Length: 439
Length: 155
Image 1 (cartoon, one colour):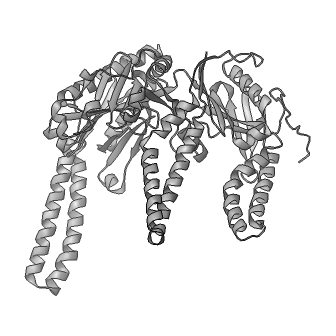
Image 2: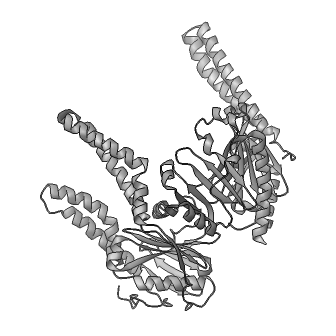
Image 3: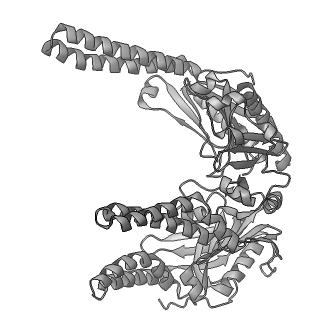
């Protein structure tokens, strides 16, 4: 292990020579990997009043694996590339041309925060953030490396200070908690649990076996909601010259940059139960590869909110920042014909579409109406479709695909001719928008 | 939107017909012979009638599906239409194509057919043109690839 490669210490500049990651990395990696398994073993052993040898063994193996991984991993910046070598059995050499870096996420899991280290994830077009990562670096160093890499990526000298950012919005934690508490998932769940408890008290003997699973399911459910809320906790949105900076997280914090022009689509969600408070949620979608690796999938799940909850004015302001001139509130005139009530009896009210020179916005849904806004120059393909029942009613749907993975703009159940015209118009408008942006 | 529509090759209909025909004969033998020898003439006739009706239905369906496939090359995009029950029309701008692939299964190869599929950065894009003559498929592939390069635009 001691072959002359220096261990990177806090605040060191970008290494020209091979450098190692932070010496605490194996422990943190092992801690993350083994926490779940160890918990299960630990609970069982505690119940049996024994020393949890198996849990300790699992943790030890994980630590050893982490140390091995750490000792074979090295990185440097050389010849305009970030180079990461890793792997013991299967050697992997990652070379990232600095100019291809789209952004760098700074992720700090709970354990890493306690130790004072951070993980850097490089965002590359078409690869998400899975392939190139530095886990872990000292906190100060991580910030410095991030700033220097970004400066190099923009073709500047590495000593250029990180461009100043201007905070534009922050989400109050009380609002976030309130917005989650009034969601039907939790309200229904709580009613279910209250009911189960009452039943359990009234008929203790017979019903425990049936009520137990209900509580367990609700607990899992609650955990999922709590995870999402924790990821969106204390969201700070700042504006920098290269894009929006999002910072959030309760246990694991995450700082990411959403570069201008990389957003494929935005979804404006306005659930009915938020309506009395005038709250809106904004979600964004960027180009990612299909089947990205699982950790990436997870982070993609938790980081998709641009604005977890906020007032309409805030949402409008933020939307205007990312997509100037776009609107998430569609005029009711752009509705579907009355006969569509035979096909979609309930959802008809919010089904609207709005197209202008630069954007298409489609709204649908009844309980949780959402509006997908797609810049016309991001459209990958357009589809028109008509099922047998819709054909009877002379209705047609237009769908708009983007390179994002989550949202498809769909103007469903329009008048047949209108849908055809919309498709033709979209094709022309999208072409015009593309040639405008490429020139 | 009324461009020049092209259809798949008639060989596609022949290929589909041949597959259904072959399958029908196999099923007819498998149903008819045991019934005829085991249960007598009446069940055998009923069985054969059912199989024949099913094959006729399948033929009709395949014929209608074959008729609905179409594609059109416009100035800036390619149109693909398909579907009997659910009618679909897909518009793929040339500049958005990531790659084009041409595939041919064993039956398709016997009849000299290929399937051309267009891929964009969106997973949902479903632009597939089956049953093209190998020559036409090659021409379309080269033409689309060249156009894709000429009109390419970033994400």
